[in-house]
Structures are given as C-alpha cells and as structure tokens.
Length: 86
Image 1 (cartoon, one colour):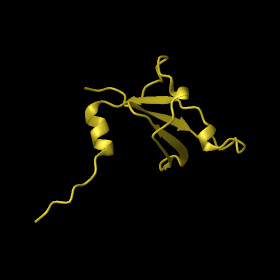
Image 2 (cartoon, helix red, strand yellow; image 1 turned 90 degrees about the vertical axis):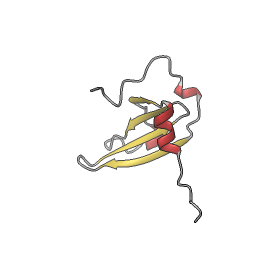
Image 3 (cartoon, helix red, strand yellow; image 1 turned 30 degrees about the horizontal axis):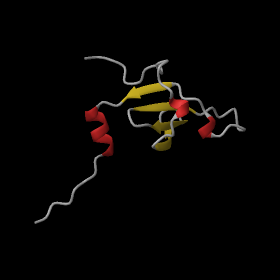
Image 4 (spheres, one colour; image 1 turned 90 degrees about the horizontal axis):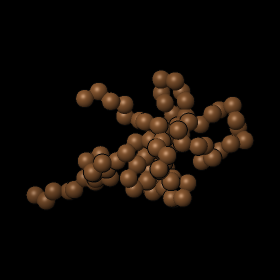
C-alpha cells in the first residue's frame, strides 16, 4: 500500500469549532522550517509557519494538511509505558 500520510483537509471537517487536545511546535530538520501540529480527537492538522510574517504567531496559522486517526494510530500516539512488577 503506497499512499500519502498527509492529505488535503476535507470540507466536512469543522476544526474551527473544536478546541485542540494538543498542540506541538517543531522544526523540520532538513529544511529548517517551523511547523505546528494540532491534535483533535479523530484527526491531526498540520500548519506551516511562515517566517516572513513576523506579526503572525504560530497559533494564528491556518492548517493545510490532515491526518485521520484510526484506532491503531491513536493508540500508538497516546499509549503510555506501564511499569511491570517483578
């Protein structure tokens, strides 16, 4: 199966009406470009931060890519290590 991980945001997603569960800012190492991830219950949105617009904060950027979270992906992201006794 060869498919893109990130796709264009579907029209039926109403992300502006929801509050994100998590927000993560990072820098793409190869190109040194800042990015922001917004985590919601069933999907993650990716926003690019443009450095030539210093008046805009990273949280003001409009997301441009979408990743749907199925059960397995969501489990891998939010799972925590369990200490085993013994």
